[in-house]
Image 1: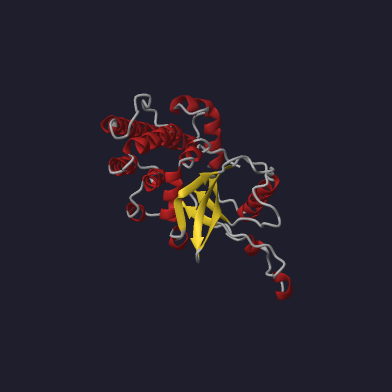
Image 2: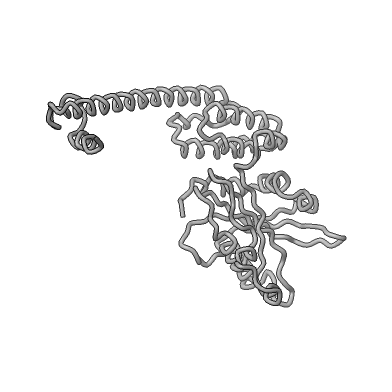
Length: 314
């Protein structure tokens, strides 16, 4: 399992109820969000899991009251932060294990009893990776080939709801004017400093219109500094205390970072070009058959092993 930079950043982000609210209301099915009273959000995050896999994982657990057909009950939101470089096709097994461990915790701590029954859980996988998520979302679908009819009722079922950040377009994120959608925009601005600056500008605009501007600014600024360090921005972040107040300074730093990368890219391009020209010269000299490999290496500046390798290609 790959170590990820969200171990503190994203887990901290979802320790605030407003970001859990924005996640469910903005990215979960509307019919679920409409039933929830977000003023009742309660944090239950803790270490519930007996390790089954050799992995480092991050999860947050919240509960919220849901009213359905006149009945109000508490639903647990089990949010797994899954930010690996590749899709984990064992996710249905992992989620079944995690939810079972969580239920075991509720019973051991007497939050409920077997006779009272278990509360409903909404398992959510929040994923951000370069590949689109293709793993099965219900463990039942992993049972292959499909068993005969008389066995199907005995197979396990547990489905999780997937939020794959990378599948949202800039336009789709733009329709959700929340700080969390701005975070997703920044996450998706991979490989483009211009897109990153535009995403930062967008989230600053969202923060400026936020009714809790100072609190949101502090939370997002802290997260962004971690994100930029992980990206290897190489810019001075110590003086960045507020995205809103220090917006111009950040924009200048991002532009300087972009210029530095462009210069390094041109330098790498020149070096690659010089290497290719030296190799072609060596090939020409090898074909003439006049000079030794050592003399060709000295004339072209290539390593002797490289010249010998080129000779073996002819």
